[in-house]
Length: 230
Image (cartoon, rainbow, N blue to C red; front, side):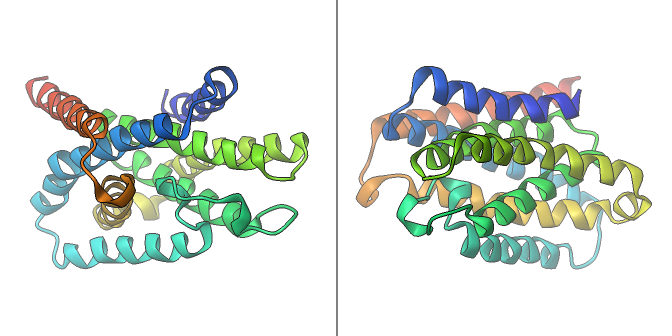
């Protein structure tokens, strides 16, 4: 089910672009919702879990995750939180963008093999839909041919399932699952806060974005409370 959900999240992004052709403002609202949801799941669910383990120096691994995402964004130009521009890349396949986003997606799939949590799965799924939208729109606006575009998206769709598969089949990831989860927390904190603080032009108050953020917080809170009850 996890493998299928991760792949379907990318397919949903592709369909939304193809059928609805969302505007930049609409994409920003979807990003705001996903950022709020991702941040909430991280703070309400993942952070308490790693700190309850009483693992020493767990905060260091969170900082490592932030540093890893900082490095990845140097190559992706901020595509993970919606900041991507066609003119940032020369003609041909944007290999740095491809590698950084693929590695990012791969890392997201790893904790799913060590943490039995539907909340984490849905946080990643919700995050991948708007990122797919942003990435697909960028590729359509570039000078790449259609076959290259869809090949890129197919590889991207399978990177998170690949991370999950390797995590399931390798004892290393289960042995150090707390540390790995902490690294992913750092990555999520970096991405979600970047989305929330940078998605509004000139940092002006935007009621639609505010509602999207509140909705993301509310759904995440209800989800975590449902998990506690059941």
